[in-house]
Amino acid sequence: MRKFTEYIGSQFGNPRGIIGKFCCLIMNTINQAMYKSVVKDIQINEQSTVLDIGYGNGYLIQKLYQKYQPNIFGIDISQDMMDIAIKRNQKAADAGKIKLSIGDCCKLSYDDDTFAAVTSVNTIYFWSNVQVGLSEIYRVLKKDGIFYNVVYSKEWLKKLSYTKKGFQFFDKEDLIQLGKNAGFSQILIKDIANGKSYMVQYKK
Image (tube, helix red, strand yellow):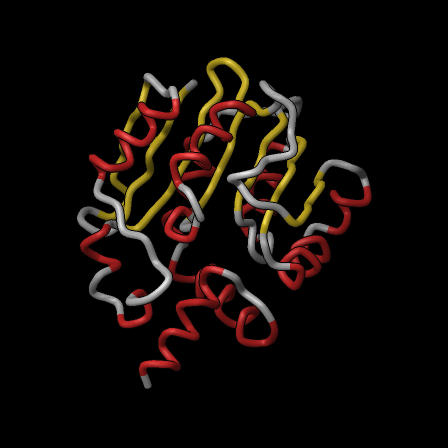
């Protein structure tokens, strides 16, 4: 049972195959309040360029595009998810409005001052180096750009069986300090589900 729960946990960090597809569908369901918070709070328009980190099956990208029609770039570590996400957003991808690739947020290939906004829902637990990742996001954001980082609380994650291996845990204070270290001076935390999930907005 332990190896099975560890395998499921690894699928949340790197969805792949049939099980990965199923896990993403589960995440689309249980993370609804998180996605809605990003779509509601994000400050973008049709001319904006956005980066989504860890896009999975492209669910958030679809919602952002439906409401704002921005130019969306995305990176994920899973080839399987890229194929699914492109298919999900095929029309916008064919129009050149959505460009997805395989990548690592700790080694972003984009130029400085590229994005008006960066989004991420439940990925920071899996980054190889959170400090480097936040510094890279700071670098590629335009002045006054915002990184919308949505997470479950440390307390909530530790209650779950599949988070025992492969997950990093952060308090709000940890995420604030890491953001300051990366150069962000304006950091706002907004609760989504009290005691369970919240959004950290890092403004450049």
